[in-house]
Length: 289
Image (tube, rainbow, N blue to C red; front, side, top):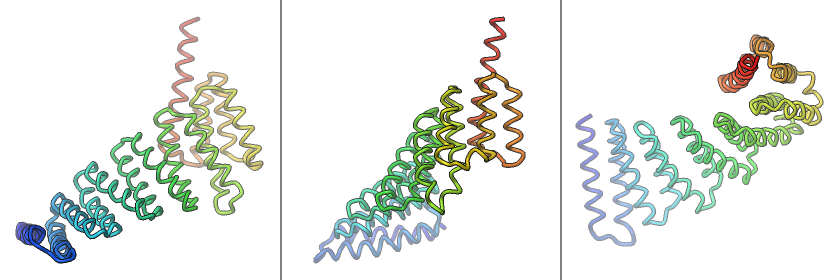
């Protein structure tokens, strides 16, 4: 690996020498790009991801001098792929550069794709607020290109993180919009009951039983088949348990549903919040008596 890094450094030096010399019609940037690309490949073979990433940024700089914005954007993506191995922050900075260039040249679908990737990076880093920003941006770009499925996937991520941050009205609004958009789509209508379940769980987290009841009525109007689903039954039973302050009833309803359809960690986390709210109310009532 030391030999590979040494070879890479030789190509970097040759490229830098090219850039510091004279060139005709931008030829020095073309020549330097070729040399930097060889250097980057050797650095990757040596698993020297930091140096490989920095060289791809040099390549992007050369391509910008040649007014090759698409190629420069691609080089920033290459840099990000190297930095992902060692630094989420550096990877995010490189992807941001790529997104801005793709937007400049009107490649909205590519910009959307890498905004989504930025959201995933920040999700990995557990920075949910930044993840929301990039998933929202990706959703808007996908929607502008009429890539509805990808836009919905990104918006569902936004709703998921918003709920985790206790921004329940935002999460509910997004999920209800997606459900309305999906109900008349033959490919998407089967996902509606799951989306409405997630929206209903967010309603429960607000702790307002009347709001939950009203929401269930709206969901029945939106999808007449919803009232016959296990998802509707679960939400209805949980609303009753919340209204009655009955932790046992709440737990039984969750366990019954989970025995048939495994609840994911997001639903489990939110339902635990509701359960803890009921427990707290019980404790407050016991203190009063």
